Amino acid sequence: MTEDPDLSVQMGTSNVFADLGHADSDTHLLKAQLVARMADVMADRKLTQVAAAKASGVSQPDVSRILKGQFRDVSVERLMRMLTRLGCEVDIVVRLGGQEARPSTIHFS
Image (cartoon, rainbow, N blue to C red):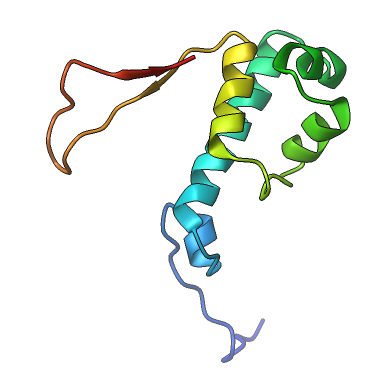
């Protein structure tokens, strides 16, 4: 087996969207994490897309599209709202870099 001199391997970061050069990569990563959590909740609760759509207040085609990774036009707030309607609690912690979080947390419901 010969090596291809034009092929190089580069270590990625923890954000694949930044690695691929997407604009607003941090937001895309956050959305992907929220969608992954939504998929986990659906699996844990054995919810179909129809049941998840009904509970979260969106259409089944929207749930399908989001779970397939087509969520560019879906806001972070909408994804958080869907999670709360699926029975999750969403907390937002804001802290200065490198410091421990203060005891107060912003609760999204």
